Image 1 (cartoon, rainbow, N blue to C red):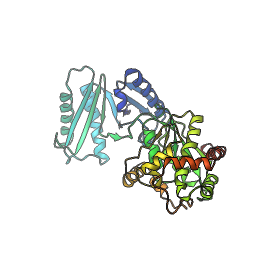
Image 2 (image 1 turned 45 degrees about the vertical axis):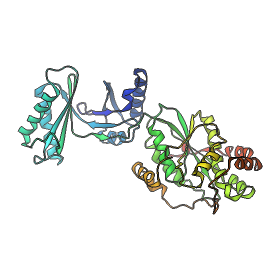
Image 3 (image 1 turned 90 degrees about the vertical axis):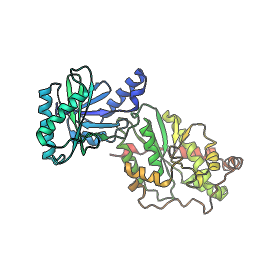
Image 4 (image 1 turned 135 degrees about the vertical axis):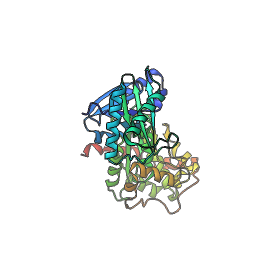
Length: 388
């Protein structure tokens, strides 16, 4: 642990919460950081100061912790002009040595203060700028610099840094309750799951094994689970699966073929609701985007969700495939989702796109859907406990 090189961790909307809620969210965020980073943590006036055992590992971990807006590796010194001058000189020499800064580049110094001092922020910025000019001869450009040196003065301690590394933002995981997420091997549902994790929701992932209408392989869903788990610091991310092929066969044999996709999606929501009740979850998440596939037309969305009383949240509802794919690439699930698979052969050639609710309910009764779904739910198994 390098005592004089803390990482300043910043959060965003937590800061506008009421004092009671803010304290609870701060505590949870710190707990989540501690779950993946070894070291000492100090909370001081809206900033989290992390003194990690392993700086490199800490930096990589912080990039994937929900609730972290940005962070900066710093060098710490006492709030004294001589000490600050010495620290800035050593810091800039190291940056030049590492090729991060060149005297040919223009620069500016930005100072932020918390507390009472005998100098203003502008005066401290000017002082540190004069140190850099004296050391390097680099030109000053306050409006559009090539390089920015940051000085944060907090009472008797001063922090020098140049990087402001972006985090994923949002709220700390575990502050908003649990949800059940319908996740397939496709592009959309992992992104929808990530977005709700980013909003502070613990997730229980539910996957449907449609064998023999799909390959029956769990390779993709396990890879997607492991990728999402990278963003689940401090949270118990769970993965369940049910056998769904028998129900699809029932739909194919006893219901109008055009209605297979509608019955399939409706059944998924109803199974998810059963799991949510067991998991004490508050809502269901899916990757629906209006009009993208047959089950996601507005009439079909109405029909498929009618038999479920629990809220169903679709964070991607207004996004197109390109936007969703870009998000998938950013979080690292895209390359997994596009791995070749067999697709689902239960989908009819001409699926229903304008389902009539009364007809859907009538068909559900005709195929004894309640009984069939109870049988499906009895196959529920938890997959993540079997993983390394």
